[in-house]
Length: 208
Image (tube, rainbow, N blue to C red; front, side, top):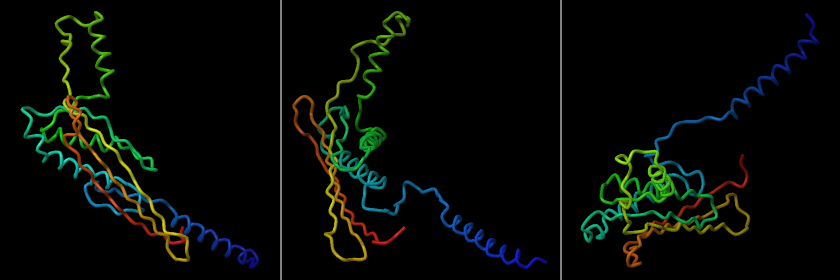
């Protein structure tokens, strides 16, 4: 047996095994989460659990407002979105869409689809251009007129610890979402509410 070859092969085998162990330890893993359960926050920034909290709180507020008791029928709402005034890229359309969905399911409010107005007009023009039999065409002038505009603003304040010797870096982020309904006929703000979320995160100075 060639002892020199055996001597060289043993360190090489050990190196290969070490690389394999490291590669296995660094491999990415995934798991499925239940979106209806509370989720651990990895940092102080906005995440989908914050959206759930905001939607649940504001939907409940809208459902319990005296506005419903003053209307002879279900209020008709047009959504003008939620402005994002934070420093983060947050899709606030998901917030307003989920609030609208919850209110539609509850059956207390009616919504006109502002995003589809151009498509609705294009379809009506197509039907009256001679491509659709007269008895199958929509009747023009029958679209719903909204009573209220639903709109809001998402803001944030971020604070970092001042520079000093420490083992952890701390960051505090405060979010505030204000939502309101404006009476289109009078311009009055008929309902308004807000949700506030404050979170602190701590991160080691050294990490990987």
